[in-house]
Length: 263
Image (cartoon, rainbow, N blue to C red; front, top):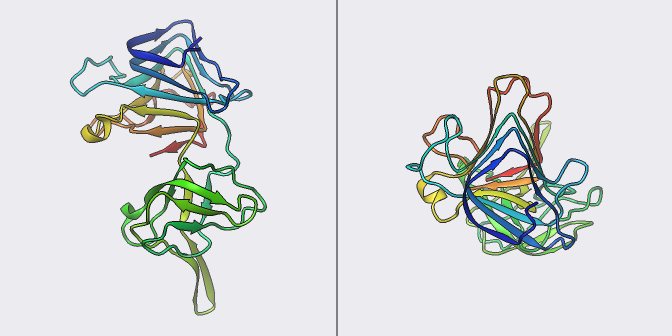
């Protein structure tokens, strides 16, 4: 049971039995876990379950460089699963995507979202969002932190931590007899369970964390991951080093990936 508030940076964690992260009764309690390798070898790693998700806050940070020793197949800076089971279930969110009600010009520090009366938002101050690009450059999507939010049950208005650099369009365009509704999507990036590469080197070196679930095609490895935030993940110029990778696992009837934020 990992029931300490923080761990030292662990070099190699081999899970042949069970490694379980229990939730804290306080939803704002924050636990941290740091390691270079975690290998679930015939074991069971649990961060919440589908029936009983993890409800407090947890950040798992992976450390390694491209020159550090590699596990065969799995590499480093990794949670690897072989003949084992990985359960990662963060707290469900009522709504993880919305869209702009009105155009947000460059320089705006507030955005107005479409009505949330049918499905009220549970977004909170301090959480991160992304506003999609609506021009010809996809990299004009912008990430911001919520500093204030009102109207969660009606027309949400979000105050941002800094002004927008680009215009984000929202409206209805009519062409002849056809009308097309076009609105910038706004996505919630934050989750209470976060899996990441170390922020000191990952982005700078384009070498982040990853998860690999591998089996010889017989469903002997299982990974169920939902409502988790992945950031500083993936390893550039390395084949198969995606944030989440099912490697030659078979038909994947027992596993799933859903409602996660990867950025």
